[in-house]
Image 1: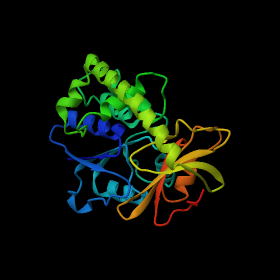
Image 2 (image 1 turned 45 degrees about the vertical axis):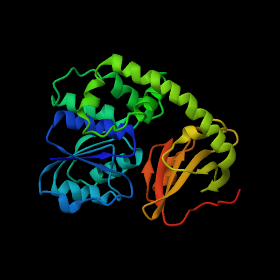
Image 3 (image 1 turned 60 degrees about the vertical axis):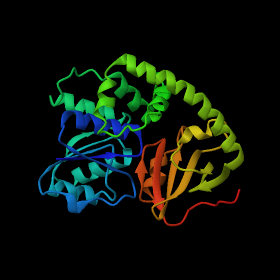
Image 4 (image 1 turned 90 degrees about the vertical axis):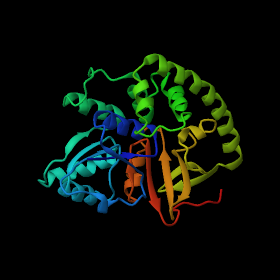
Length: 287
């Protein structure tokens, strides 16, 4: 048995950890967009979980489903749309759970508890709730941001770190991490403001006016000090990774759908957060 999880963020790590907590002998494999998929490692008809991730193009998901016992749990809007189109063509359904607007780790918990695959109460644990809410930019719980940064402070959050993930069922441990994260968050906000002031620039993509920065391993929070819905349609980060450009798009402006922009360029994501890869940057680097 194998489980592929999105390696780029904590929603993916938590999703993988929940699978690992349930299937102790499951082989965990982190994967990100642009990584080659290890087809040669698959054993025909073995059970495979894919969580918080979808192969691109979607035809590869169809192929994976045809050679394995696939359980796919995801929340990315474009991936769900591609799946619905696939189902409408009278194809065989893929097991799992797909729903936009909820973090993948919460969907994994829901799937496992609904199918009696974990020996725990169905109530979503606090750490799962907070990581899920952060990933879909639902910050109604004030702990979501500081807990996220506190978890980033952990040396290794990979799903195999069973001791770490098991400890998070203790709400006191969650509170400790949240308090540390609050301190880190204050410092990070200060650094972000300085970096954006020095390095950000304005550009356009597909008719949208964007504030952009050449930086990876970040997100829309880097623009907190300059973001203005009246001035910009969205935010853009980009960087060179594994021989191609990786572009991430963000917005909370009503009426702007970043998933459409990304999908048109071979990528995908959510309305407010999406991305794609390209060989040449499709926007002007000159302010």
